[in-house]
Length: 106
Length: 106
Image (cartoon, rainbow over all chains, first blue to last red; front, side, top):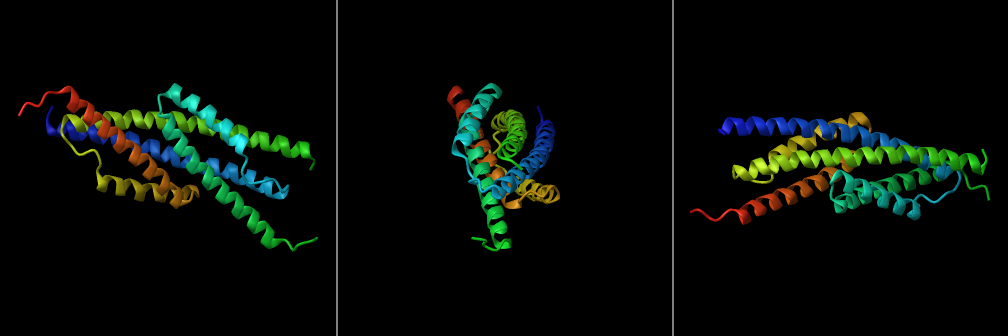
């Protein structure tokens, strides 16, 4: 196998990676659109931004799926913690913005 | 809007999140299958596991896509650094396993 073959093999793999990454960005954008809706709903009804038992169920389910897909469960844990903390940050922001808009009525 | 409505709205959003997360797990599994192939190719040809200029180009492109999708660019940075470090860890593992299998010939 010559150097050119290696370069073109590498370029082909990288095209796949670039396509997958674009899909990841768009699917994650949709996920945050959905959690923003949840954030609004929670803020409207004074529900807490984070729900630990829901997160535990999500993690357990995704670890099972990861095993099935042969993805490292530790990686899934790290990914979900990154996503969860971003969601909570956004929920807190939503709640703070609502509070700033509304005069205290009590 | 009653409590039941809120609960069923929340349940519906959560179903979307669960579907998206399953898609994320499977798409990420495929991404690591692809980077594993790259790792093997690099190890075979003694290429370094990480390529900083390639990573910089990936990040710049994904920040643009994120803006288009209305996803926080800072979140994309964090996500890609998590993915990059996992890939480099796996590439180093691949290189070490190859070295352990082959007797030194020099």
